[in-house]
Image (cartoon, rainbow, N blue to C red; front, side, top):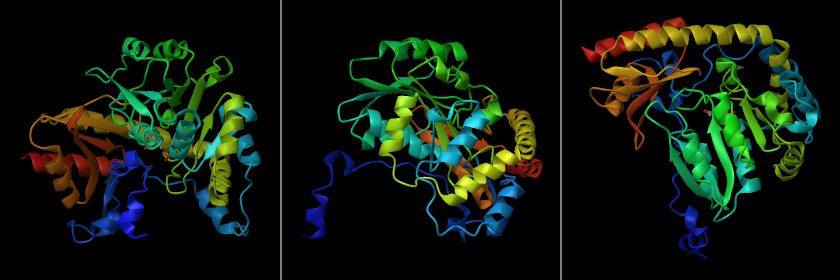
Length: 364
Ligand SMILES: Cc1ncc(COP(=O)(O)O)c(C=O)c1O
């Protein structure tokens, strides 16, 4: 069969599929920026500018066992995560980043024709995984402050609804969903995925509710607060029966030995990491104040490690390009519900200073 013949065999709904648009990596920018690649300031992917704990680096250097597969049952890892969250081990499942857990949850619940409620604008992976599984997205618009419309969420529930996604803090807008709203949605009895990838920056969680609500799933990540984005490790807390099903359908050995070590050492160095989180939160507030003083930007208050801004004068794509030329990467959006806007990751103090100066220079 020739390659065109093979293409005809692709599942029809995936032939023209719109993938996830990931952030630009500095390695791809040679010749496109006015600074050396290693001095690029990366404020486009909500990574932790301080990196991981030094204990992680040391333990990875010292480990002689990378030729051995990790424990498929994640026993040590789940125990560590149970200790961190205060939730019993049988509720916990770890993944190669929380993205893969989102994908796994959708694969467990959603088939062709099933509906998934999504409060937009929000993290695009909920759409991505739902569409790959042939599910139908039921998009509920947030209001102008990006608050979730609980009434519309409840009214949109049908016999086909299989999952409701709630990101808190939300990406890219940074706002949290009030606890009473989450509980009201949980009272529908449908599976509700509360994505707390940025929990350590907001301090707000519904994790303790998992023992009360048999339909609550909480997802967390080590990418942001613990600086492990490159090692890929996230986890979720699920009703135990769901956790068992997920353990059964996950790809074997889905968390690497390196990631397991990194979790163990991060949790052993929690005070160090929490101090870094504090520094990022205070820098987020300084960044917010600085952005507010630029009259052609409208920043939104955030409880995550980034700030979403409307660009009120000029064009966000152009602003993104000009900042990139100066060696500062931010994320820009120009699509329905996210018109002419940018998202800036909170960095170190010198990153804030460089960004604010660049914005002022561009605005002149
Ligand atoms: C809301 C939200 N959930 C989940 C993730 C995925 O995180 P990871 O797969 O790195 O754990 C992200 C990453 O940007 C996110 O913003």
